[in-house]
Image 1: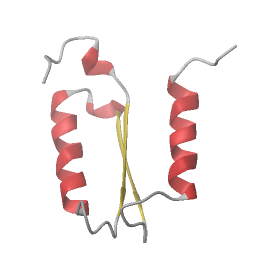
Image 2: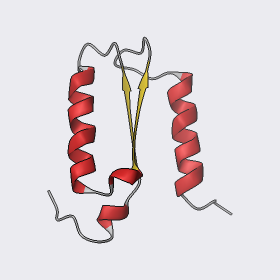
Image 3: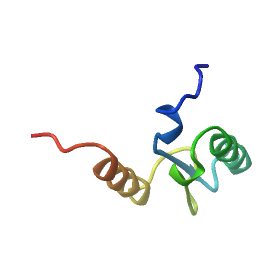
Image 4: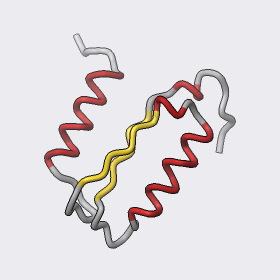
Length: 77
């Protein structure tokens, strides 16, 4: 666990969670996102849930990940 400094406090975070995950209950995802918001700029933390998704992924999640990457990372030339 490293220190949270000025640069780290402004990092953008996307956290995704299925509402039917049997391995990591949604409650744990909710607790994690609240902890993140207390450590870094809460405006930069996005938490998305996906209806019916278990401990896996879905096309909607992958589209959200792509949009997040496109927004926060520079394009590759």
